[in-house]
Length: 529
Image 1: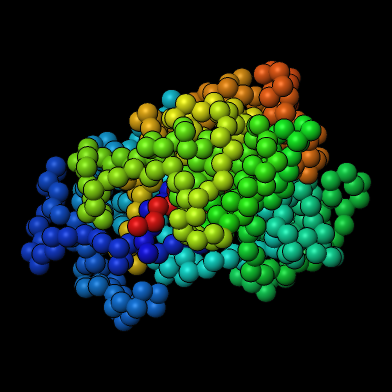
Image 2: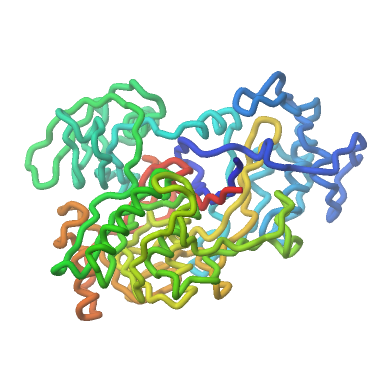
């Protein structure tokens, strides 16, 4: 099985896991033993001419694919020529890439230049998702169905001193939620292994903080000083990292005398399918007339699951025969996927289970048949989660946003291995039934201020760490319930300008929600084929 995906790529992001590389999924064609003698501006030989011609060829068998490495002796120049031609063939904005002499740069540095310099309407870089990963590490991490951690999702609300790191939510039955840790939403992390989270500034301390907060291996013991929500005195706990399995769907309940359903949906993982079907069936049996879908921390995942969610919200009358999402490549490839060679066809609104987990593939899905939905969002609402919003708007459903601006990730790519490095370069975008997919600055509630994306009805409300998620008094949920009754917003919440970064010490753009540290499988738009 191979995947297409969308991955966030701030350069300092600690990436933990993803999926198989392009090896074995189709690749470059047109190999030749005759190489061009020199660089000619505007002339791009087929990328296959240079593929796997490496300055330091790998030897032996790839332990993850079972296939012998294709590498032969080449040079930095042949690696750069591959990147130059590959970018010209597949990059979504290939015409905006400067054609630079590949002989003048080291390979990673050259790749970093092979992208557009254009800006979004907000002034942010149009291409924020351009990066590389060591292939051996990428493949190793792609095989894990679980992540090393504690079961506490740490949210970095400010990455530079004075820092602020809090627990956003937890996974049940994990180290974090068991005695003696007993962590819960709203707990502040004050120290990690004796290092001051708030004020430490030297590189060694930053490394200690990242290692303790975001462990990459199991069995690592780290000591934390934490201040629980509502507490006056901190306490010290020690946690040992372990394999943590996400529980994607939590806190399914009915509110407002049973008329409003609420669901916390955190991950478009395979295991989410069965949980989602059970949750929607529960709400359908309760005959709810409205739904609050809480995806403020949902970074994405399988697009098929996002399609199922959208269908279970809207039902068949509004979605039959309609496009959930269409993949659009650059203008060289209007009809055929240039990597798979298949005719480009849209992802439909799935009316039946797709066979990830739970009911068998083809089992009819429950539906709420709603004409509107309230979605709780923030800076951590990305990719496949944004597809739910965009697709429902595309078929005329009223989508109401309560919270913050989403991350803005309508783009995607196939990961490409060459000579031991896996490259990620934007190759396509997703559009809805109406052909819309231009939200690089995200979706924003209508009364949002400052940097906003596509504005749609709703209210800007700061995240509330003083209440558990699903509590009707929690600020975003309370605002959603109020909006359903009166179509009005509460007074704007006061929130400082915080630094968007999942890694302590990173230098990135300001937002108000902070950012979670998550694996790419939890941050993508992933298509199966």
